[in-house]
Length: 109
Length: 113
Image (tube, rainbow over all chains, first blue to last red):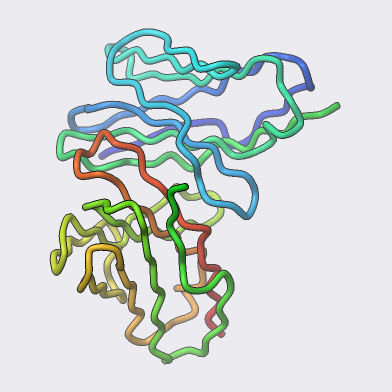
């Protein structure tokens, strides 16, 4: 079966760095997405990786290892507004998105 | 400013009622999606559409139907609402190629009593 695993909840301190991991098992692979979802709001796109390596966008970076079926989202210089759920989703061989349950990130002052 | 709108933010219906959830996008996107989101579960795809009058079943289509008569509008229909359909419903749209980001509406929290 197809599966996405990510931690249910993480806590970090304002100003620090946090890494949110995601492992995937899909029938074929055509890339991996990260979305951010604040409580009570719609998910918004953060990144898409299809090649191995790290892609940086300001304070957020996303990493992919296709051989390991692994990705992470790295958030630097954490701010209180980064408190949100982070959703990992993999695109399978049929170009269908398989979604993880999301990681709730709690930022403490 | 791109936008996906949904007809209601909150909706309360009774068991057995027919429920219509509407979604409109102003980005001329080909693809539109309906998901439900429940605590502890990932987004689950109910139906999607790649073109006008075209629809495909997602992972959990049972108890739902959809309509796409115009490119910008995608409707989700619960023919006879049941309590297990109480959930957050999210609509999304995207350009045709699957690697494009999806833009989500604000969601409709449906409660079926």
